[in-house]
Image (cartoon, rainbow, N blue to C red; front, side, top):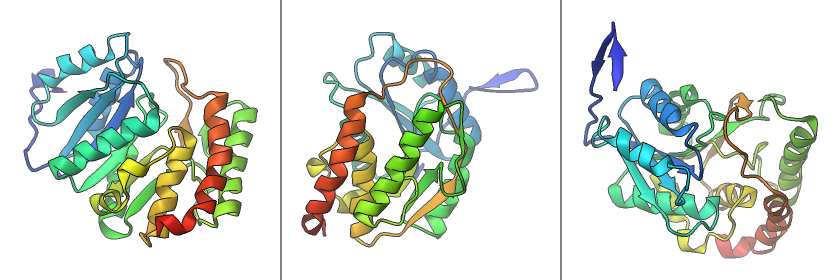
Length: 254
């Protein structure tokens, strides 16, 4: 719903929406309602798909309750197996392709990615590129409320990825990304291997190898205020060794 001059209106969506925002969730009850409202408030002709990994905190129930206010443009897919962010996105990508969406975005539920950037990134996607990255590092370092250790880890991880892969992307681990459907259709989703930071690298690398045009759009990344980060040491090590794996298998992705 949206409110104007104190009057609340039902938010009606068109069946002809061509843009989908995929939001994966696990225990995001503190953020999910607000992020959905904000995405719809800052975008037009856009649908949202929440992919929830059986959150025990009621995230899915909150989304279902909101679906009554957003008919035909808010959807949820519930997965019984929690097997990583990458597979949650792959589930969402397949759903988006089956439904015929032309532009597909991935973003976090915790407001680290500002929905205000979506219309700008969508415009770039329509006119200038096949894949657009909401980049923290394309113009300096634009990260708010992260400890210095995590900033350095993320920044140098992206530098490491560029060195190994030669891919001209300064924020290869970024999770705020928009795709043309043609990119996702060209990448065998059943062969996507990784689940965390390495998943983000894998998708960009495979798109780049297939000669799709990648573009970085500068954003300001803000650390979550509510809820708990899902990053752990296993995800970091996956990224470090995953890059080498991707580079070794480069020819198989062409």
